[in-house]
Length: 265
Image 1: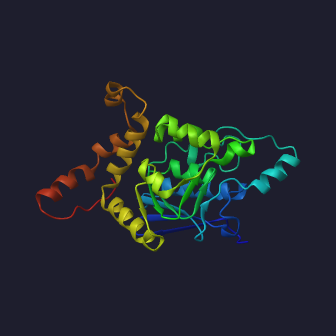
Image 2: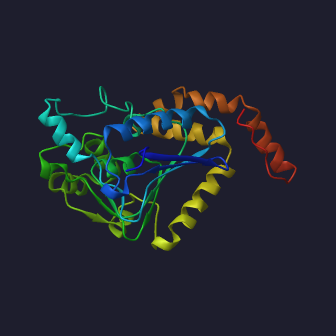
Image 3: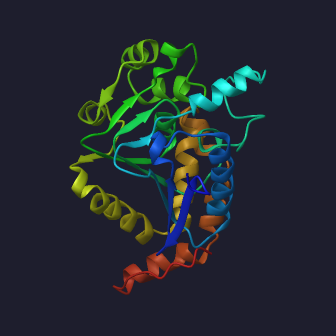
C-alpha cells in the first residue's frame, strides 16, 4: 500500500485530488481523512487554484466510503461510534462539513460511489460521471447512518420521496438515473470522462476567480433563506469581488474586444 493515501497535484490553476487506495476501492480511513484535510486547507489558501477535481484511483471506484475494517478494529478497541459530522474525528472539518470552501469542486466519478463516497459527491459543486458509475447510501443495511451529510443533502437534492426511498433501503442508483434526477451534470463513456472533466475545468478557469467564489458562497449560503433576506445578507466573497480590480477588468476587456486578464484582486 502506498505511503500516502491521497495524490495531490496542481496544473494550470486546477488542483487534482485523487483518493489513492484502489486495492480497497478507495475506502477512506483516518489517515486518508487527515491527508485530505491538509489538502483542502491548501486549496483554499492558494489563490492560484481556481478549481478542484476530486476523484478515485483506478477504474473500479470513486470511493466506497468508510474503511469498515478499520471501523471494526475501532469498535473492538472501544472507540465510540460516530454520528453526524466529523467533529472530534480525523480530518475535521472534512469536505462534507467544510461549508466555507470557496473554490468549486468537480467530482470525477467512475465505478462505485458508495456511503461516504457518495456523500463526497453530494458535497461537490459539479459532478461528471462515467456510464459505469453507481451511487448508494448503504449505511441502513449495516446499522449505520449516512452521517457525513447524506441524510441531509440527498433530500435537498432530490424530491423527498425519491430521496427517502434510497436512504431507507440502501438501494443503488445507476448513472443514468442520477442524471435524470439532476444529481450529476453529465454522464459519458468512461473513455471520454477526462475530456469532459477538462471541458468543465477549462470553463471554470476562464471565469473570473472572484466571481466564481462569490457566486458559490452566495448560492449555497442563501439556499434556505427567504428571498428578501438573501438579497440583504452580506457575503464575504461578494464584498471582495465588487471592490476588486477584476470587476473593472472584465467590463474593460469586453469594451476593448479582448480576453480579460484576471488577477484575483
